[in-house]
Length: 427
Image 1 (cartoon, rainbow, N blue to C red):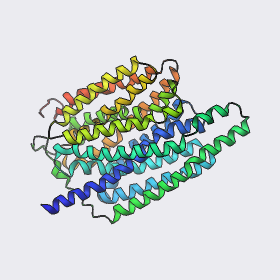
Image 2 (image 1 turned 180 degrees about the vertical axis):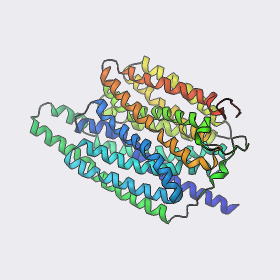
Image 3 (image 1 turned 90 degrees about the vertical axis):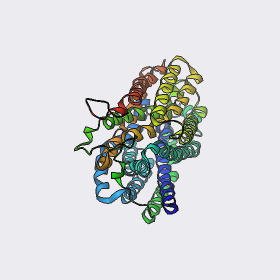
Image 4 (image 1 turned 90 degrees about the horizontal axis):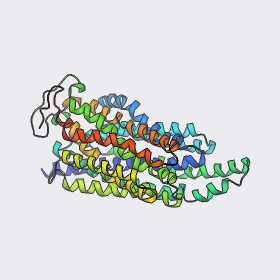
């Protein structure tokens, strides 16, 4: 028993390290969007292609990742994914020297391809490595690692990339084209040294995972629902309605999480909040999310169920989205900021409710779940386009989150219970 507990904690620590890496490379987009907007002279729509390109890789590569994992197993898949991520971050170096935006986007796509492979392995691994009713708690722990990394990333790299953004933006107006190009070239090179370090760290973590004693987990052990009832294995993942609806729920949950982090800085700019203040808002959002993850890890499943947490989060999200729309200035920004609290409760609960009872379908189901992350990229781009379209009333852009939270509310009340397409037999 003691050996099993030790192995469990060891595995939890290794996967926690990977989630730290996820957080660093995912939430850096919150800095890259305003950074590229300045050095590439982009619109909000063009800048938010950063998020779309990253999440599009999840959509394209998740199913191939599931195929790779079937051949390699979870551990080797994680190692290969880390190496691909390092290749993507290295591409940022020539992109910075040439100041070519599509090359940056290519680097993001390759990095996200590696992330898709690692996440397709790590998320189901953490979901099925222990009792299914504790999935939200375990993913809560992973969320803590993810958000601590994001806070560290945004605080450190935000101070490097955006520290003099206000002064640069104001000085550009008085420069001729040659001087302006030189100033922007210099600004673009801020990214080089940090990304060299990031690439080295990724390869080091890949080596650590490779030489670790991370065990494979038994997928078939996940073949029960939350009440411990055995579910018959089915021919296709499409025969599990609560999974299909869970994929949709995770699609919109990605939007609910990405907009308050990746979109909040440009939202602050649209509200005429100076960059010197706006650049900190992504970090503040992650602090709020970190608090939410800590709360979930304490409460679930001992005091409250995963579905109750999801119900609360969706209602809280709806209320704050409405508040964001009806307020203005800094108050509207703070309302969007506090949406991070509801967003922190979505991921783990949806994974826990959607992946139960899948047995041998777990890897493929996980791939579909990872594919759904494109929702964060699509909705963030639409959010940026709405900011451009309704520049005089940017609050309109947040209304896109209303249908997202409504669907999550449906899933938390009824959708997760749907065992068959014609009945709702899971209770």
